[in-house]
Length: 181
Ligand SMILES: CC(C)(COP(=O)(O)OP(=O)(O)OC[C@H]1O[C@@H](n2cnc3c(N)ncnc32)[C@H](O)[C@@H]1OP(=O)(O)O)[C@@H](O)C(=O)NCCC(=O)NCCS
Image (cartoon, rainbow, N blue to C red; front, side, top):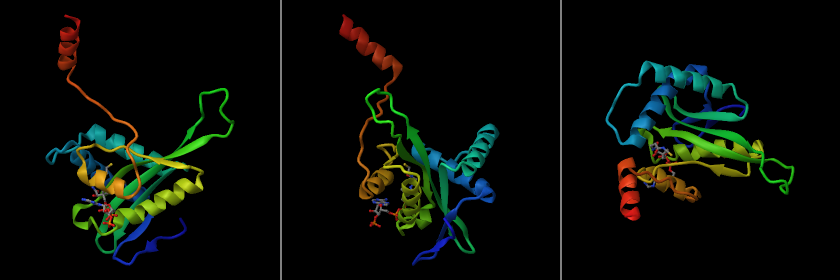
């Protein structure tokens, strides 16, 4: 992206840079709490360091884009990222052409700035980046319990294609035992 875009409202979009990393870590921490439905907690120092390193590495990766939304004189209010992955293919019969997918992740808009179109604006940039890198499809994951994510992704054209199922080990063992008796 050549320069930040000014939107109708009061925020700008730009590519994240190293100076944003501390705020991005805070956003990722809030996102993890949100997804887990947990109360405010502090990140372990080791995990904070891991995130700092992962973000620094993502910022230097030309197949990844971290976009941020910023309100002038206030600071960052949102982030989202996309990573372009190559699917080499496993079948002999498949064409030599490499498929590419854009994996969208780490989407966060500060609660008081939601429902103003900030994420929609960020998604424009993620889509443009994916398209520019030859990704024909966009993929992401969200928890079914995350109602606003579900509503947002559904509105923006994403349809679930799989289910991640969990069970207590003990329950599965009991079912197996019952079924074998
Ligand atoms: C999901 C999230 C990023 C949306 O950000 P946002 O800036 O509020 O999104 P937008 O304002 O661009 O909304 C886009 C569309 O999604 C829908 N939408 C957004 N939030 C919604 C909600 N809480 N309920 C229902 N629909 C919603 C709306 O239809 C909206 O379209 P509209 O403006 O035409 O009505 C934001 O709610 C958030 O940060 N949530 C917590 C983190 C999270 O769940 N991240 C995704 C993890 S996969």
